[in-house]
Length: 439
Ligand code: UGA
Image (cartoon, helix red, strand yellow):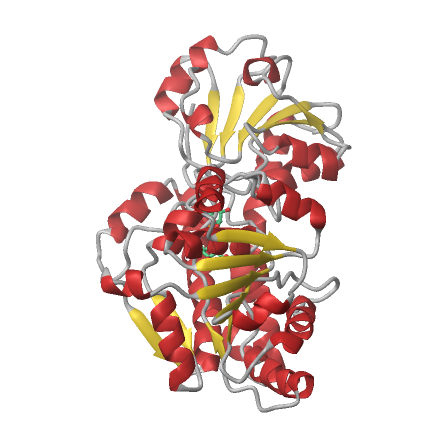
């Protein structure tokens, strides 16, 4: 069944969701206040690097089902489901999430809502937000708005569209059958393919997302804590992860040790969960997440300490950082371990030379104090040490024997992706996080 949907907020989540909804066959209006963003989308550019998304965006615009507007108009009255996809970033000076964009989104939407329209929030929010928004909607519409639902999104950057169209599960937090039915209709092609559709109350749906990200962050910090022990005991954290991962109860995913997690989601979401639990009077229940955050940040310090141990001092040294994005196949540098390590090195008196296949425009804009080099072969020229901080394919494929012009053959493998023996044969001293390597 073809429905009319709107997607409010066209950042990572919204742009991907709008394309996915159109691909499912629905008529989609994407709403975003900035004309420049609309112009870019209209010309087939989502505005961030996401493999395959721009191509599919163009296809969906060409299908005639996907259109964009800067604000709601009368056509919004005919929308069956409004998806709210605005950002909920970390508040300045606090661990909590900033939910103000949600409130402006429903303020703009309220004049066009009817008693049968469904509003489905997709943004990651502190548990209890939907209940507050329901009250706000009553004020704004003048009636008891019955159909606010929560439908969290679990997409990963780099595989966003694929994750949206083929998620492990769909979660629908609802308060009545009308909202549930509408969401079932929206996702019908996916439900028919056997994707689990889990119906919950609003609070559970909100918490599912925070809990999933907290669990993922915990797995990564768990293996990084093991890496700290491995580094001082002669053990190998990657082998350890492989061995424990065969136990199906543990699983082998999200157990890659290295410089840790970053990005616009995991770090802010564990902090927001801690802040919300504190507000609810149960701060102790997730107090351990403080430790998860600390273990994660300690991995960044570890790289700087290893460099200092090796080079004596960082003052006046030139250090090449391979990678700036928080993970490969993304140009997102938000809370990126690679970028943070570059800044820490620079603060310690060295010159950080940053290479990344696609994220350098963002680095140059946000951190003009960092030197960047677009040419990978050139980047090694005269450097005293190299840190592999984001596991891009081009770094995995580097041939150490062909690297020329380097002043000092010392590399830290911050993602455990290099063939250490090969690099050693080419005369490099290699330190891989989570391993004790004698060269
Ligand atoms: C994460 C979740 O995986 C998604 O399910 C969720 O929808 C999304 O946040 C969100 O809340 O929007 P994403 O931030 O795109 O997705 O990135 P991940 O693939 O989860 O990676 C996060 C960080 O963990 C990266 O810096 C990555 O390098 C690091 N990581 C991942 C590790 O250090 N080790 C691992 O084993 C896995």
